[in-house]
Image (cartoon, rainbow, N blue to C red):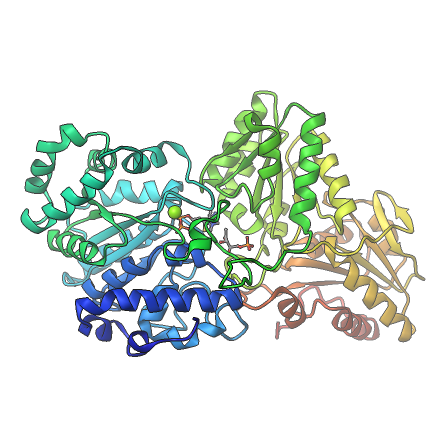
Amino acid sequence: MGERAGLLESIEGPHDLKRLDVGDLPGLAAEIRDLLVGSVARTGGHLGPNLGVVELTIAIHRVFDSPRDKILWDTGHQAYVHKMLTGRAGAFGTLRQEGGLSGYPSQAESEHDVIENSHASTALSYADGLAKAFALRGEHDRTVVAVIGDGALTGGMAWEALNNIAAAKDLRLIIVVNDNGRSYSPTIGGLARHLSSLRMTRGYEDALEFVKESLGKVPVVGQPFYDTLHGVKKGLKDILAPQVMFEDLGLKYVGPIDGHDEQALEAALRKARGFGGPVIVHALTRKGQGYTPAENHDEDCFHSPGVFDPITGEERPKPHGWTNVFSDEMVKIGAARQDVVAITAAMLHPVGLAEFAEAYPDRVYDVGIAEQHALTSAAGLALGGLHPVVALYATFLNRAFDQLLMDVALHKLPVTVTLDRAGVTGEDGASHNGMWDLSILQVIPGLRIAVPRDAARLRELLAEAVEFSEGPTVVRFPKGAVPAEIEAVGNLGECDVLRAGDPDVLIISVGPMAEVCLEAASLLDAQGISATVVDPRWVKPLDEALVLAARAHKLVAVVEDNGRVGAVGDAVSRMLRDADVDVPVRGFGIPQRFLDHAKRPKILSQVGLTGQDLAREITEAVAKRSPVLEHHPSR
Ligand SMILES: Cc1ncc(C[n+]2csc(CCOP(=O)(O)OP(=O)(O)O)c2C)c(N)n1
Ligand SMILES: CC(=O)[C@@H](O)[C@H](O)COP(=O)(O)O
Ligand SMILES: [Mg+2]
């Protein structure tokens, strides 16, 4: 298990796949599943989603001609099989490793890859634009195929795109709905009810069989197909609710198709391609298909396991992390504050709200992959006298910036947003790093931002945030294990003094950077440079006491796990400039570029956020007393 076998070894691209006999395809699917389980067991990754799209991906690459036809993967976490069939099966041992295969499509890896961004619900918009470009350029032999999950289909952008696609009858665009009934957890909302109506009704198997039979007999999808279906629809109405839903939008619909019947999938895709306009092919799949531990995994069907035993499916235990601390504190807050409610965007367990949901089932809302809706629904909840906590991964807040600005902050509403996976996350690549929030949130009037350095501060700051009722608050913390507790040795206004030194260098340490800042301070001692290290706890608004402290020092260093542009370092510079404090400020953070995937510690070292690097840079700066605000051009 975990090595490439015969059939898969013979495939360097879709052309080799097309040459295989139909009778070889089940064997190929088995080899792919073996490689998925064996390889991901060693590296971690999105096993469940990829086990669910083995037959679907084989069928897509046998029917269409990538890269001339464009295959788009929404969210992109389910593109491992696509990578295996486009010549990268042999490299799967390097998945998500530094310099190895990305866990998402990557244009640098292959001409078959298009969308690198792991943020959900975007594929249909890309597809709309690509198909329009092909049409305008007269390339009428090129088809765009967008694979979107039922979870991603709960995102607003997907419906904005569908609205446009439904109006463009000449677009050669096939939307494959990969419906496994799950996002992380079971997919929520009215759409999910429509899509899942198939599974719930007794005629489900008959419907699959009926459609499979029909695919062989009726002409290309469209009116005749619809009439045929319509004639029997009365008996199958509740089963075909998805078709009705999409066709009410003006979109042709083919399905439901058994998403693990490769030949049925091929027939449906060929029919859909023959139509020559936008068509939805609705495939019913199972997340984790073919690997019992994933199929039976009650929380998330092995959505994104870490390293595990491929025989037993037992995962390596995860350390007590920031998310656990948040989860425990939310349950305590929930007991004391009946007005506190919680919102998740389809990630109840990953963001740490499962225990809160268990304790207070009526006070938690899963809105689907719909961060924009989450923030404005939170504004509604706050207008209704409640204090919502919206728990997201930091990178996904980007999508809801305007809602936080104009729907929450403009009305000074008491909404708390917690940002897990803030800072470098690493293995999920460029679009998962939470390196944007400390920059973009600086511009929101009245919004307060807290950055805890350890578990004790997370508990304190979360409690302070939900106590604040004059406007929105944000609490952000990184992925993974919580660091050792670091107690203050004094106070500077509301800031914690972590190390008191002579007034050479003032190091302003943001959240979990405390450990490396203290290490740097110790190393600076050896250079005869004395450093004072302070932790502001709240980085927006900054404490005016920092102005007085800065005035007494030769240099101010600000260290944060965020992109540097427009973040806390720049805010400190602005504050000191406004106070006519003429002390140079050095901002240390993540260079403002898209980072390649690698483990978090490795990336922090690559970008100079280690005690050694900080000490060296500060020593140089003190020597030059350089008022450099922007960091090394090389970074
Ligand atoms: C905007 C955004 N929010 C949250 C996520 C986190 N996320 C990654 S995969 C996933 C579930 C996707 O469900 P679905 O589209 O049904 O794909 P499946 O995993 O079921 O194949 C979520 C919520 C994301 N990638 N993008
Ligand atoms: C939800 C999401 O985007 C994950 O699929 C991604 O891989 C992040 O994983 P962690 O929850 O392990 O950070
Ligand atoms: Mg799904």
